[in-house]
Figure 1 (cartoon, rainbow, N blue to C red):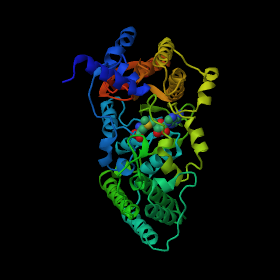
Figure 2: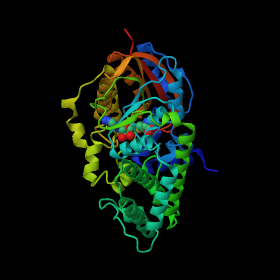
Figure 3: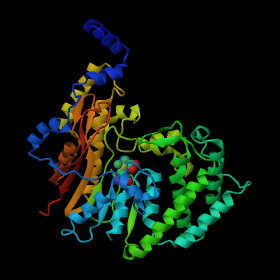
Figure 4: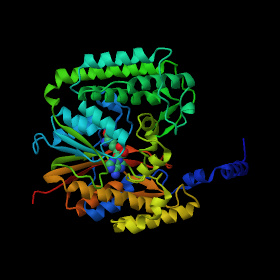
Amino acid sequence: MASLSQETLFRLEDFTLLTARRKNVIRSPKQSGSSDEDASPYLEESGWQLIHAPQEIQFQPNTSEPIHRWSPYVQGFSASFVQRTIERYQKDYAFPIVLDPFAGSGTVLVQAKFNHCPSFGIELNPLLHFIASVKVNSWHLSPSKWLSITEHLLRVSTQASAPRSPAPAFLKSESHFNPPVLKNLEKLKAAIDRLETTTLQDETLKNLSLLAFASILIDCSNLKRSPCLGYCRDKQIQDEAPFVLFSQKCQQIAADLQKCQTHHTSALNTPSVVLLGNSMNTEIPQQVDLIITSPPYMNGLDYVMNYKIEMGWLGFGQSHRELKSLKDQMVVCDNVSKGLIQGFSQTRRYSHPWIEQIKVDIQSGIERRGNYRRQDMPEIVHKYFDDMYQVMRNVVRFLSKGGRFVLVVGDSLIADVYVPTDLILARIGEELGLTVEKLEKARERRSGQIRSYRLRETIITLLKETE
Ligand SMILES: C[S@@+](CC[C@H](N)C(=O)[O-])C[C@H]1O[C@@H](n2cnc3c(N)ncnc32)[C@H](O)[C@@H]1O
């Protein structure tokens, strides 16, 4: 048995071998802390209460829900949450006009349509805009016509001499896919590209084929998205995977079309419009009753690079440069260009004493740690709230009196500094003339470097008073 001094020596030696990052994690004053504790001064100052209301708000259950399951979109939120929100306010608005300014793959719009609620969505990523549009605009397609098209595609593309549409030149497709899989994907893509579109229905069918194709790409690849895109070791992909998975996806779509046309006939004509644009300035053609949304989370995901494979294959991005420029227009994430952050102080529109203090604390946290993945993190944090202010200011203009703005958002811990994202967004809502009606803690979550720190996901409900 080692003596105490030997044991201590061993531990010290071990410690010096640890990376600087790991040491900072171990030394963090936030180990085993929680956002509930750290948020209390902010709550006290505001006079708000955070209600505990555990509920399902993540996308995972959608993977078995009709229409929602057409695209594997890990950052979406749950259809049942949208359903509960629409039902919760049924007495106030029978068939509310719904808006989602961060439409993503269209969860809010699809669920609004199931409830016969007209809806609008805004989405800046053209791939996600495409996916959401196809999901809300294909319900009337004949399942048998759809299946005959997909059989044709499979018949044509499985021939040995089938033509191929080349994989996107700017992506490293040879590493993303095994050679026979890549060849089969190129054949399938060529068959879809060659579909003739003389009528609107032909075009909708072709778009649906492209959605089905995009939805199998990651499963056919040596990659995984969990939630960030990365290589997956030991993944076994059969050469025929593109055809098998495409066929399964098409069958699933046919079953959902059948279901919609049998059980949701009156929803088929409910209008859903997805606008391709920036929610900081996109105009909505009419007033809405309910805004239901989940914005990007601070230091969260890069909604462009994470979808670069599908964007490249469907022609929504031709180069990394183009993707980077799109990313820089989005609500900021910590993968944003340094140049954009350098110029931010000249253009910023919003601040609040909480944000200013948080920036000072993050700066000290970075200095204490001696290194951090982004030295400009204080400015990134500020830009996040500035961007969200612009989005909220824009969309609140289109909210009718008596309307509600419901946001699902997670808070953050950055360089050992707690950032109450939910409460700052509620503050912005107040400054824009809304009343903070409810703050509900929906679940606990772990994210970032300090896994023992308990963050949360909050549902913020803001009301636009009638007077
Ligand atoms: C958390 S996701 C929304 C997911 C969506 N609720 C769903 O269930 O699919 C945030 C979305 O906001 C989009 N986005 C980020 N900045 C934007 C902006 N300035 N304008 C419009 N969309 C933006 C991203 O592309 C991403 O799809």
